[in-house]
Structures are given as structure tokens and as C-alpha cells.
Amino acid sequence: MLKGFSVLLPRPPIGLPGLLATGAPLVLGLVIVFPLLVLMANSFNISQPDQPSAYGTQNWVRAFGDAKTLNSLWNSFALGIARTAIGLVIALGFAWLIARTDMPGSPVFELLFWLTVFLPSLPLTLGWILLLDPSYGLVNSTLQKLPFVQGNLFNVYSFWGIVWVHLASHTVGIMAVLLLPAFRRLDASLEEASRIAGASQLTTIVRVLVPLFAPAVLAVAVLAFVRSLETFEVELLLGIPAGIYVYATRIYDLTRDEPPRFGEATALAFIFLLVLLTLGVLYQWYVRRKTFTTVTGRGYSSNRLPLGRWKWVATGGSLLYFGVTLAGPLILLVSGSFMRRYGYFDIPNPYTLRHWQNLFGDPVFWVSLRNSLVIASAVTLVVIPLYSTVAYAIVRRPSRATLATDIFMWVPWAVPGILLSLGMLWLFLATPLRTLLYGSLFGIIVAMVLKDSPLATLFFKAAYYQIGKELEESSHMSGAGWFHTYLRILVPMLVPTAMTIGLLVFLSSIRDISTPVLLYSADSRPLSLLLLEYSFGRELERATAVGALMSGFVLLVAVAARYLGFRASHDHV
Image 1 (cartoon, rainbow, N blue to C red):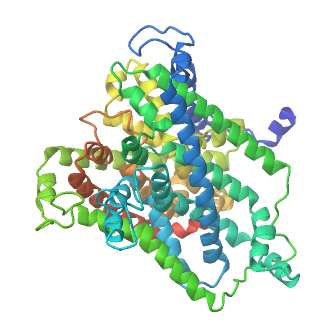
Image 2: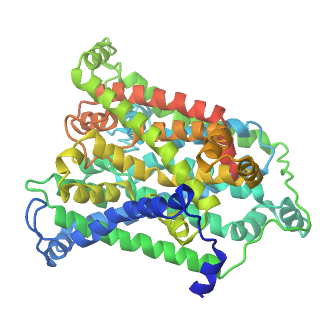
Image 3: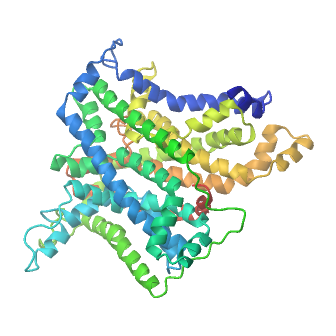
């Protein structure tokens, strides 16, 4: 069967296009997968990275014989399942309201969801601490003034506190954004037929819409679950004071021990690779055994459901949701950066500019800011030409090599950032170039370029599919070579896509914590990790100042990305 399938794939021509279509994409795909192979092999390596390799099962025995490790595994799955289940219900409701009803303000609410996706989670967490801290949180302090309230009602340093912060910060937002395209493509006549048959709106949603959306819902749920395993800065800040460790914070602690326990961390990481692989296989098995056609050739209706008087209730509820989950923590974040003492609202003269003055007078801040700008700029400048070329090879020069590459490109989205960081760490330490790669800006840039491969490749592929081949064929018939055709015909048409990708990659590189967290040193520390150090070191006043700066910058970039055509992603997410 494979032999028959290979006949359908045209052989790439010899020359530069042929090289792009075979060698370059395949090499890049292997580079993406190789750190994970290194991770798997080194889970059995019982020696330190600077010592000759020796293999055994001691890492696995020590890792899973430790009660802390088993507890962290349980916490990871429990938090991930809770976040995914609750977030999916909320996101389905919002996606339906925005895409399928006449709720006023739908475009604004969709934009706000995009903003929650790209805002850094750590600054928002600092805002939630000011709101829900059991000692000085503004919500608890206000409620305690009521005569019928005894004690603290909310505690952000708890299992459900962590779940709430994740739901409010990113989980619901990214789920809603990913579900919106599926809701927009649904044939409205299916809903109309259900209502004609006498079904209520709730019954229509449960019995008609949810089954039809099963592939999209499952894909979003799996992605959200993987993302829940990736994040660790929230758990680091809120979980450790409550004694709640997850696998990501456990890996972080093991690599920071003296001496570092890389082998045990790698064994723990490899278990999660197996879990993620199992999730992927189960998803493919489920999707292939069922049919989920929602748009057919018999006509298509995209009419929105009129909510009547309930549309203003929906708008009011949406405004309340974003007021609580987005505006509330952002306002407290900014105000916290001016507090004389973090969390003390009632002391005389509670506000000051001292923290901002100290921050701007600290050379470490300026070095970290420079590092972030250098990393983000370099990653953006590499990602755009690299993945535009790879996407061209996948779309225009299909072969077995490009087919494999297209699969490899999704690996960074299927693997939590902390695992990719650990795999890159092993790879860097095992090469003679360790002094160039480990703890340097160059090493962080390499890791982030690999991490951004799915997003960039996806958008460039969509752009190439929209550009007809006849434009290139006409150029070739006029005597132009491949490079001239690519430069003069394709590049100008790719500029809007490249600008959007560049903005998103730049923004992602600024806010990323999990990818560089095991790879940086004092000289290569980006601003996101300076924020993490301030937060974990309880320098919360200075942390809120850094967080406010990062959040403001990210908001500006996100709005710019939206303005420059990010809406096109509806058709390709």
C-alpha cells in the first residue's frame, strides 16, 4: 500500500527546488524530533552530562519511588482534567453565542478572547493574588466587612485557586478561539430542523451540535490538556505555598538540585511523552470511526439564531465575565506596581513611584529587556524565511520527505514547553558546542525557533494554497528561474501573512517562560524570567511593575496583529 501511495507523490526536480523539497524540510523535521529522542535515551542515562554515559534503570526507580513524584503526577492530571472540563463547557457557550447568535458586541468579545490568549499568565496571576489572597486580598477584605461573612471565602493558594486563575487567564480564551471556526462552518439548517421537530434550544445544543462538533471539541480538549501540563509558572507561584507540586514544577526542581538530577527529571518527562502519544492515537481512532459532516453540497445556511430579549442578557453576562476575568486582575496588577507594600491597601499613603524608579535604575532590568528584544527579533527574522520556505516545499513540491516534515512540524504543539526545554538542555550539554549553546542567547533562540514551527508553517501553507500555480508557471514560461520567481512573484503576495506571523512570533517570544526556563543564565535572562525570579523571590512590587510593562506591550502587539489581518485565521485554525 505504501508503494502505491508513493506513486501518487511526484518526484521533486533536481536543483534548488528539489533540495528544498527533500533535504531541507526533512533535516528540519529531524531537528525538531531529535531532542525528544535524546530525552528518551537519556531517561536511562545514570551519569551526569559531563561524565561518560552509563545506562541503567536507576533513574526510573528513584523517580517513581519518590512520593513527591507520584503526588506531582496526580496533581498534574487532576488540575488538567478540572481545567479542561470546566473550560470546555464555558468556551462552548461563548463560541455558540459569538458565532451562532445575534448577540450584540460579538466582534468585541471575540477580540477580548484573543487578548486573553496572548497576555502573559504570570502578571495576571499577580493581579489575582491581590484580589484573592487569604490575608490581604481585596475581595476577601471587602466581603469580611459584611456582617454575615465569617473568615475568608476565597484562597488563591489552593487547588481550585490554581484552576480558577488558569480558567480566567488562558484556558477558556484559547478554547473559545479554537472552537469559533467550527461553529461558523456549521450549517444552520441542522439547528432549524431540530427546532422544527420541537426540540428546545438546550436539547438542540446537547443532541445536535455537540455530537457534530465532536472532532473539534476533542482536538481542543486534547490541546488544552497538553497546555495545562505545560504551564508551571502559576503552579510555581500559587502551588508551592500550598504544598501543591505538578510534574512541571517537579522537573524544574530536579534540574535545579545540587547536583542536578537530570536523569530523574528525564524519566518523569518521558512518561508524559507516552501519555501524550496515547492521547493522539485515541483521538485519531475516534475520529476515523465516525462521520461528522456538517457542510454538504445540498446548500448551506449560516443564519444566526435570534435571541430576542435574551440577547441583552447574553451581552451583559459577557461584559461581566470579561470585567471579572480580564479587567479586574489587570487593574489590580497596575495598582500593585504603585503600592508602597504589596497588598496593603489601608496603610497611610499606600502608593509610591519608588518601585518604578528602582526598576528603571536597575541594570539587570535593562539587560533582561535587551535580551528579550534580541531573542524576539532574532526568532522572528529566522522563522519567517525558514518556515515560508518549508511551507513552500510542503505545498508545491510534495514528496515522502515533505509529508514526513509536515507531520514533524506539529511536534512542538504536542509537547509541553518544559519537555522541549529539557530535551534541548540534554542536546546542548551533549555537544562540543555546549559553551555556545547552553546558557546563551543563541541556544534560547534555537529552541524558540523550533517551538514556533507549527504556527508559522500553518499560516504560510494557508497562504500558498490561496496563490494559484499559474502565476509561477507564467513566470517560468517567461524564462525566469525558481529563485527569481519566488522573490518577485510569491514574496510580495506573502507580505501580509509574514507580517502577521512576525507579530505573533515576536509576541510569543517576549512572553514565553517554559521554553527558555532550563536554558538561560544570568547573562541571557529574558524579561519573562526576570519576572519569574521577582515573583518567586517575593519581590512582588517590582514583579508587578515588570508584569504591567509586559502586559501593556503584549496588548499593543496583539491589537496590531488583529488589525493587520489576524481575522484570516478563522479559516485555518
